[in-house]
Image 1 (cartoon, one colour):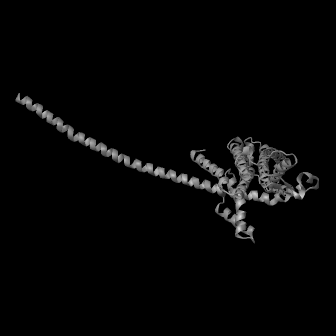
Image 2 (spheres, rainbow, N blue to C red):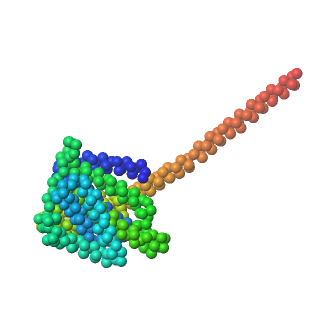
Length: 368
């Protein structure tokens, strides 16, 4: 990572830290959900963008994480921060186990299997034998945590900073995971499955683990979302949530860590903007926005920014090359002129002095 990227990252983090201090509580709540969705989109991008497995059921893992947090807080009095590793571990196990039979499926068949998982999850949460845990159709209401240590923040601001800290941790883990051997193996499986196997990559293990890690990210996001909204119910996790996650990674940019942020901003704010434009047909306006983004930015927002930065860097290199060329073209003229002037002065002056001295010497000899 070069110094420009570090400066940009520091500026973005500074802006993120200042936001809750200058916005209303409702806007802070919205940006908290942006951070939550960014974690979920990053998990789905690990699976789809980097490993090439299409999932239409990640809303189910989001629901599992949310219910883990809600049940632990409501039934057992577990602190909110302690529910996150539990939700992540449960979703990691469920995702890994689901990924094992899914190894025989690829492409649209895998998408159909995950679609079935996303469709069935709300009905499973309403199952009457689980009502005493899930609350059935009534759901579970939980309390929003208060700032610890007497910090001068309201609950919305504290939850924003807590979610931001979790986001930074999860993004750092994903960045370290993808820049090493594991990341190269995931991309090799995505690009050429047979060649990856020929190179010795255990494709079955990597695909199952990727499914589990992706579910873990989404489950942690679900737990944070439940804490932020203070309520979970089966109908909040329908199949439309899974499709929304897929839309988010496409808009943000596939195989991009920063794309999760852009996609989260899109799925959080664009539906609200569409609703303000037209109360009668908000989803039609949302569809127009979606088509426009896909047409203008076919590689997502992150892909467009990456191409723009590459073009700017190329133009800067060309400008430096042209400047160096102009200096190279001017330097010989100055050097040659100086050399010619120096040689000319030596040629003109030296013989005259020498001849004068010779003549004077001959004259003195003649007189003597």
